[in-house]
Length: 311
Ligand SMILES: [Mn+2]
Image (cartoon, rainbow, N blue to C red; front, side, top):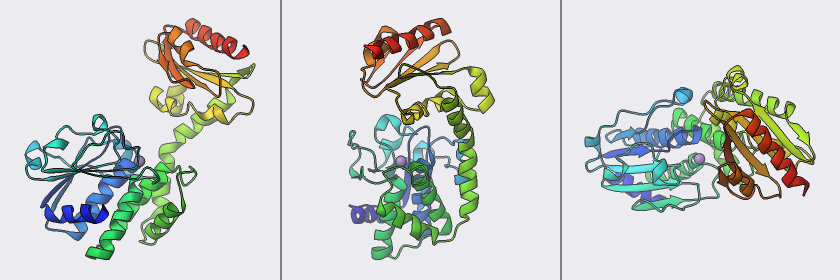
């Protein structure tokens, strides 16, 4: 498959690379890293990165202006995006061919060619494997900047190699990428600074987790989010944090939004989606959500979770 992808890349003069909405370092790293590898090794080709720029990822680079006319006869590659609804940019299907390169489960089998490896830690790791194939068969070279982008994607998706998805191949890829000599401390600093507000909120959550009868309740007001410089959707990323607390069987986050209190239930056993449904929501057995009109109703939902877990 890697060789087929390289053959296809070699056949096109114009290549447009997409990735997912609400990008993370792996989305940018795989997209911009692949763009740079193609551009460096085929200077005569025109390569574009599509999608809206996310200023929090400025330290990795910036996508291009891509007009609809550019898709005519172009090869389109989508990286790190499991399904078409999540592709950033609406013209992705207007090229001559569409290649999907991803590491999420292949539920939406879009594209005329797909290379999906759910065991890979990051799509950036797959782009690195593609590079290795191109290095062997087409003499591809890797610039320090391309290496920096792929490395950023890998450390982004593996939580700096802490997640179990980081396997031996991940470390080998990272070791080789580091050997291209980009400014690693500067990259780590930029990524760390992005994470500081979330790390602080993580500490706040653990300190303010109110535990009663094995049920944890975390109340996060809009003032708290302002204080930490995070949004309600950032907060949602940390809803798994209390899972590490010993003896906790279920918990709920009460997150203040503009006109409601968002309820996010998590459980290690008791089924919580029925409870969420009672509050106008729903979800999975062990992870569900609902909303409350005010703090009083949110507290009643927390109380209902305690009752559910005491049975
Ligand atoms: Mn990814």
